[in-house]
Length: 235
Image 1: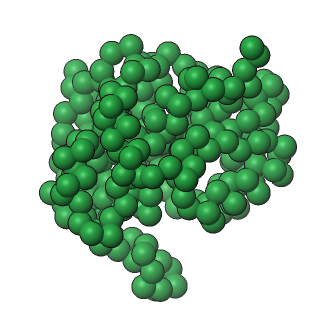
Image 2: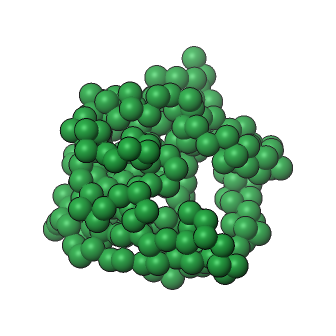
């Protein structure tokens, strides 16, 4: 069977790893990973993970890896142009399908599909509409190991930083927090998975706090503070 060459949007977190796992036995073949990088700090956008730990994941999977380098606070137009350039380059390599680990955010799914359509790329969502509590159980059963490296203080206490994602984690989640953090409550880093040739050795560094306030001072969900765990390679 000729499988469909696919690029997987790789955040370094559990949802991307689970999406990769599900695509292994599907009509889609992941040929490369694609990640957005904060070019000012050499860290993954939103997650704050060091680029060298991202590189370690790609090496552990033994897969090609593309990066989109963005300024610290890119506007939507800047993001769209960078993504369009990356996808156009991938199309030249006969990759016309992009996969995402999104689960239930309809507006985000629609946004991705609209942007991909402008360059003639199909969108695939392996985790779409799956129960997020069941997905956490599947992550543990599959052997994907991930820890929280970023959290929104509106939803979770700082003590959750570095917490491993497993069934016991579900029992401690405050009411209203999605088990997979699909509403932006937290982000994770995968340090071991069935697709890795070996676990990635990491150690916990300092906890860093950053406050984000919208330019228009609206009190929306982004007018809040985030805690980041500075995860380090354990060499």
